[in-house]
Image 1: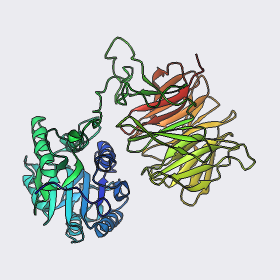
Image 2: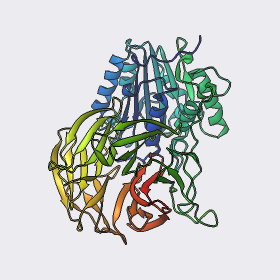
Image 3: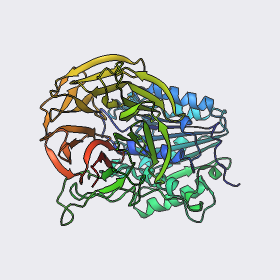
Image 4: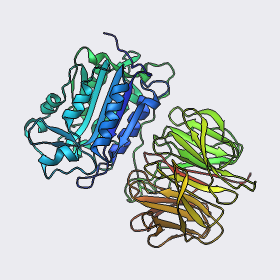
Length: 553
């Protein structure tokens, strides 16, 4: 049977993952899995699913919420339903009882798993619905603290039996422990990392549509060669001929997705994966891109390597931001929003922002772009909210920071916005109701230039004209600990993705500083060539972009 792609309008995908746990080891690589997988599945040229029909459910707050999302997708899907889970897989009192873990799950009491974790029997019940013609289930689970019979065998037989559903393709990793699931410091888990690489890069010699059979054959071989547990796949009714993506390797002149470069010391700055080419052309605006490593160590070479510098627009960039999936880079200059596909290195059609742009922020799901404006009118500055997919303005927020909004940021849930500007205050807003939720006061000087939420905890960092970065406890709305002191005005601040272990700051002395968020000590300082850095942005994989400008000559 020849491979077939899902019907994008009649298919749904639900990507579930738990990277943060209260009682189990953390799995930060799951965050990378979810967003890289969504990006591959919804790619404009090769993906088989529409972005609006591919939902990421990361660190769900409860069992009921997750089941509701699954049921909704199963009801709407009439062609293909894809369900993916990554995280700790917990085992019940019987060897065939599988419970995908949630943030508050624990392995101490198997009898409580049905209320603390997803009961796979209920997930399987949703997959049995006859609404969807094709059903695909992908499980990337470890089995924390349990060595029960075949769950530790190389072929994962018990997993395959527990997940067998008539009319469904079941692809399961058989990772036996945390290390094989997520090597320390890795961007992805072992199994999902290989899966994402195949979906992104394609397979030379295979047809235009990349079938699950072809993917599994190479995936199994690669995992075996690397010494990782071997995955298992079960298909019924010819399900192996289903395709999730077009084969990028079979497309003429198709740009390859860049592999992630090896990590080195923080001082050995890695050149950006965006390449030696250009994002835009000419002008005096520049992007500087650096990749801090995960852990500090001695330099791997004789000295620091210069960051990759990429010219942008004739107009200076006032703000730069990566989408949560890392596949889109947006720069704001005056009223224009310029956009680049970071994988193809191609510039996309620009957008009129509706006002002079001063700051930018994506919502966590990437659906909304917030634009902090510059206004000369008496009405003052505001935040404009744009639907990324339709490119339509969906709302405004009166920020009340005088003539401009220097900084805007969404919290990790998307429910809260923070803004700052031409005053000494940081304001908190309800993103949906667009109402005030509080004010953070403590900066001196004549303005606050940047705000950034911690990716995991209830903290906010703000950078000010008073040469400090201040950390705020959002529960008490009070400053938390000592400020991070700089020699000059601090124009930008950003937390490292996933765990927030590092804080990057851009000082007006033309340096980008890296701080340990826990100890509040400087880890390293990067000279930002000759530019005055005005904004910073981390990509989900840790790539750091600094945007700024330099006078001609």
